Length: 255
Length: 277
Ligand SMILES: [Fe+2]
Image (cartoon, rainbow over all chains, first blue to last red; front, side):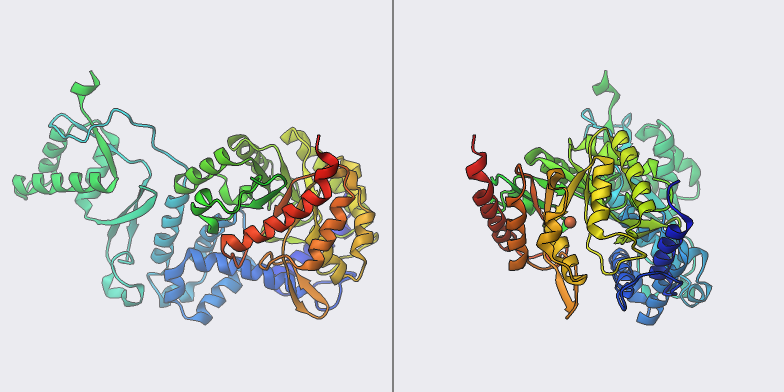
């Protein structure tokens, strides 16, 4: 290590001023210049957060937003060298701190999660293999091939269904949101627990369409089989047209 | 197609950049930190861009001047990025952007001190070894010195010569620094290791008070900076790539084309006669 403690301290004090606005001794500064660094850094972080979380920014009052960003800049040590990933750390920071604001806005963390996942899915590395043998025809023996670029969020508030300033404690419950990337866009759908279950079955087993329908009927004994089959097929067709289902593997074609 | 002048690619340029015929850059520059570890739409756009143009990379988060260890995991990702997009030229900044285990996402001024020189020389060598190429280091704009015990130009010379890396000469930064710290830009240029210049940046800036310019990359290049550019490139032994940086306030392509054409014209005037084979 060639760097002296003195130089290291000068550097640390400079950086720490940019974050905290507290000036520890730094030698040789030109008067009234260091605060430009703090301003520039603050603006870079604030801009990046505002563009990542437009709904959250809208929900909060300006002084509340500013308080959060101030607190984050002062206390958090950003770990990602890639600035587009920094907003995730902001959401985590709020999740672990900021209890007053979370009490005032019980759905705040759900909103952060919902907005962050849209960015994450939009940017994430490609996960689907090239699938050349997929069919658009469905037969009883077909297997469903799902787009792997998805996530199912479990939320306590319907931030995906209502404007966030209208969400209240009365809305508290369990909500599932399917989010996926298809055709260069991130789409989201509210899911009932049945479809969450169904996606899980499709992903983790090699069931055919016929088997999936049978399993669905077995786990929903109190519902009319015809209704189950219809809603099952409607889901499959819709999700295929939206790009969540990539297509169908038909044994006869594979052979 | 231009012969010398390229442009830094920004998200704001979108896909339209691929279709536009008016810029005709000779190459484009990517900031790896904006594009590493991604997929989807932007990866496809980047692939197409890299098939159409030669690409250089200009990093943001290496933080060569940090007191702490280099981030080897990050460097691994940089190396992969250079490989993925077939990039030879990688440049970074003579500054630090990470300190006390936190990224600040901006370029802080390194103290112009002898121990910092040794520290940085060693680190540049490590990075060059790891990336298996020479890298180019850029003189950054700064608004205040910190605990300096040598001049800026001495600091730059010691580092570039000591580490045997290339120099990315941002002519606008020299102009900004000369203005902000009251020295003569031309004589600063004269004292640089000009044989090590492998790449030039040009950009606009914003004057925020009578004695301070902030390097915003958000305005067109001003005439005195064009003049300093012409002065500089006449002194270079061989032509080097020249890049227009525009990061904020992104104008129409036609406005960027105007600046690029102007730079290309100056390059051709200074370089072509001597270097036509
Ligand atoms: Fe530059």
